Amino acid sequence: MLIHGAEMEVAPDLRPAFAGLARPRDVIARWGPGVPPGGARSAVRELALPQGRFFLKVYAYSGLWRLRTVFIAARAGREFRNLKRMAALGFRVPEAAAWGQERTLGFVGTSFVLTRAIEGAVDLRSVIDRPGSAPLPPSGERRRLIGEFARTLRRAHEERFFIHTLRAKNLLLGREGDRWALHVIDVPFAGIGRYRLFPGWGRVRDLAVLMRWARQLLSRPDRMRFARAYGADRALLRKAQKRARADGKSFALLVREAVTAYVAAPARPRGLPSITGMFAGGPPYDTSERVDEILRETLGRKDPHD
Image (cartoon, rainbow, N blue to C red; front, side, top):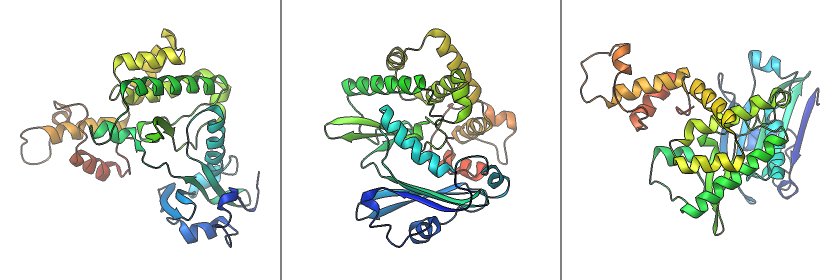
């Protein structure tokens, strides 16, 4: 592992575009969104290069988070390697084009990872939140995608490789010629050590993350089709469902339910409602722009669905 200095790895076809860029800070100065501000750990910018469209993600560490980096690999490098490993396992992922990091006495200062954009793809969170906004595969293609993804995930789990971030916003649905494809993005935590030591936990976690949003998109027969293709028995499904329910009661979700009920109420008294009043009534998941706006203001998050 690099202790002091800078390192970069660039795909051969992109090296002309990186001419004159000797360090990660040079890459960020030319193309980057800038070092993320305090409190944010990453920032992303879309790039249009002669070689195509790319996304540049810049990671930054400060305070206690930077102290931790002396013991672990930079997230940018980990994501770069994870994308290559997942492609070898059979997942469809963005092409990992380049990455770099700078360390001072073992501590990571800044790092970046560059991935090729997936043309014409839409994330499943958008499909869930805005029904009809994007075309969906016909039933035959949907069954094929479900089976392929389940078998690929099973193969990865058998090799003790766990994804950790299979949220709807990190799965992109698009076309590859005449066929549909499901791509996985944003995988800096895949393959982390503690789940390799305890593979049962990693398997349950990945399935639980999928369960948290699958009900909003897939029918019961489709969910059962996934379980059969994965080879999950009842005991494993029960553990994953229990974990999904526990994760689903996070603070962010409780706040979302409260705000949803408050916005959806047909009539409200003037002034702020009581806590019990906010939690009473209304649909469980209203994805209107007003709810998202309130959540961004309340939680200070880029994506209120996390």
